[in-house]
Length: 159
Ligand SMILES: [Cu+2]
Image (cartoon, rainbow, N blue to C red; front, side, top):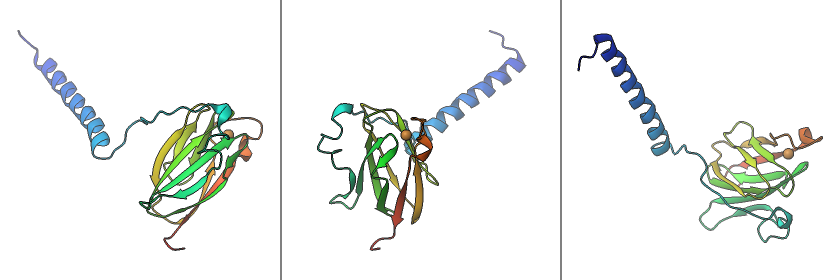
């Protein structure tokens, strides 16, 4: 089979690009642990506040030093709307909504997740610096959506 010289060049470029893009995906997934969320957990939205976990949302320190934040998003507030977490420790958020779709975005971090009624949103983040971070809803959820915000206070160990 005769392949034209320029055709060979284009085939080589295409092959290099495919290898480069595949490598980017594999490196991101393997070395940097960047991957789509795989957590899927359902909850009856009508029973959110009756459930053991979401009935009393808040911050809880686990035995291994990691922190769990249980939160309910509702029109038009976060419950709790102010949380205090330690710097440099993994903080796992578990959030659900009893009414409509909300979002949680913590300014200055890569925390950005949707909260969908019927599901439990879970993600883990380690805050690298102490400080106060604004937390807000970024999914339009009604007339007072713009007022739906809260505060994440990241404190130094022992503070
Ligand atoms: Cu909202």
